[in-house]
Image (tube, rainbow, N blue to C red; front, side, top):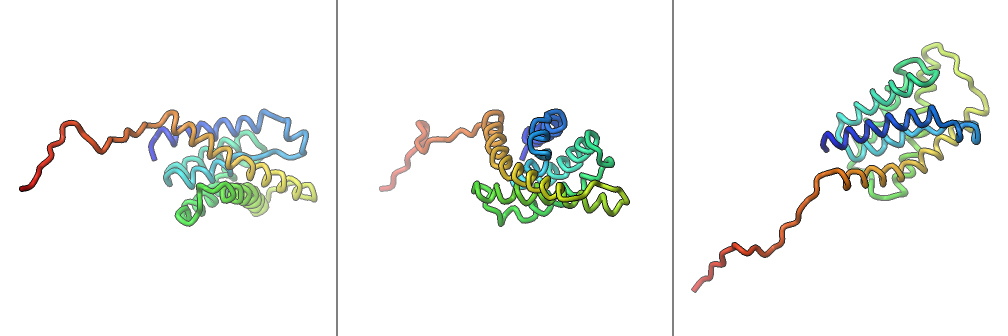
Amino acid sequence: MNWLHTILILIGAFLAVFWQSDFQGFRRLLSAQIDLLPALMVYSSLSAGFGTVVLLAVCGGLWFDSLSANPLGVSVLPLLLVGCGLYSNRDLVLRSQTFARVILGLTASIGVPVLTLMLLLTTSQRPLLGWGTLWQFLVMGAGGAFATPILFEIFDWLHNLLGPTRLSEPSFRADREIRRGR
């Protein structure tokens, strides 16, 4: 689209990362933290360009890893894989349907942590695994499924508010010349 759209998405990622690291209400209540980056990746994959998807994966993944216990850069590849997969199939997705947004948010919000966990296990890290991990995946999936349609509405509203307005020209112009035949 345009640079304003990309900047708004990156600001949203920055705010989402710092919100989920600073706000501990959901983490204490549900014993799991909701991750908003996969939901934002669904939005950017379906409504922005490929450069925005890559920027969001790199910047959002590094911002997330810098504030979490993950090794730096481990979240970039899962976000990029989800974003590229959605971007390559964006013509097949009914992006205006709320049900499709919910399902894509659920899938991405479970897929990114699972891919991150697989990367952590292959790099000889020792993450804590147990029955609580399943509960955390369920909470993250439900949170992403709930957040994705809301993010679509927020960013569409921001784009309409700050983006360029299209003026519709009427079909009648006062300066037109009518040529008549015989």
